[in-house]
Image 1: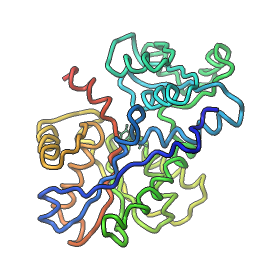
Image 2 (image 1 turned 135 degrees about the vertical axis):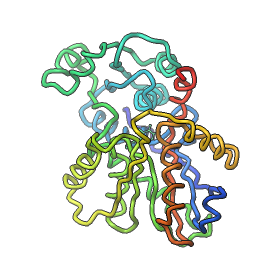
Image 3 (image 1 turned 90 degrees about the horizontal axis):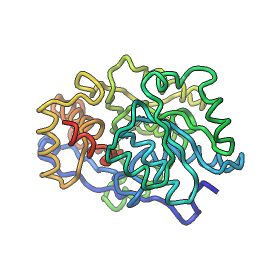
Image 4 (image 1 turned 180 degrees about the horizontal axis):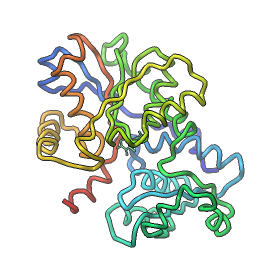
Length: 308
Ligand SMILES: *Cc1c(COP(=O)(O)O)cnc(C)c1O
C-alpha cells in the first residue's frame, strides 16, 4: 500500500496573519500552514500526490517514478512520503549530477536517482519517453512532473474542508475567498472544484502568463465538468519564474519579522507581495476576509540561499 494509513490525516492550522498593510486596509487574512503538515512531508505537493498514490494501489504498484529539478518540492514530497509510508521512489532529474540540499534529502529518504541531462529532460513530453523507464521499473507507476492534472487537483479539494473546520475557531462565520501562489494551477483548480463557485479563488501566478496556466486550469475544470467556476489569475511573477529582486527580498524579511512565518521567494513570498499590491490598490473592500495558503516550499529555499 502506498496510500497513507487511514489514521494519518495531515492537518494544517489556520492562523490569523497580522501585518500592518492588512490592518490599515481593514482586511483580515488567515493563513493555512501547509508548510507544517508533517515533519518530513511539506506543502501542497503532498495533496497533489494523494490520488496518484491511490491509483498506484489500484494497479498494485510497488512505488512511484517521477521527475523534477535539483530543488524540486514535488520530488521532495514524494521521496518523503516513500520514506514515511514505506514505498519505493525513483526520481528522474533535470541536468547533471549536483549536490543540493534537496538532493541530499532525496538520497537520505531512499529515492533512487537518475540524472537525465538537459536535452534528456526536455524529451519528457515526447512519445516513448517512459518506455525504457517502465521496462527498467515495471512495478512502479509513472507520475508526470509536478503531479498535475485532474488527479493532482482532486487531492487538493480537501483543503476546503480543512479550512471550513477551523473557521469557527477564528470567530469567522464565513470567508470571502482564497489567495494562493500558482505554478501549474493544479492546486488552484482543486479549490475551484471544491468550491463550485461558492467562494472565489485568486491565483497569484509565479510564472509568466505565457506558461499556459490559464489553459491548464480551464482543461482541469472542463474535464471535471464544472460549469460555473469562480477564480481569477493575477501575474505575480515579477518578470520571470524564480526571478528575485531586492523589493521582494526586503518584503519577505519584513513579513517574517512581523508575523514569524517563514516564506520563500519563488511562490509564497511573491504571492503575498502581490496580495499587498492588490490590497493597497483597493481591490478588496474593508471587512473582506481571505484565506492565504502557505503552499510550503521552504525546503527549496535552502538551495536558493546558497545559489544567490
Ligand atoms: C509547486 C508549488 C506551488 C504551485 O502549485 P501548482 O499546483 O503547480 O500551481 C506553489 N507553492 C509552492 C511552494 C510549490 O512548491
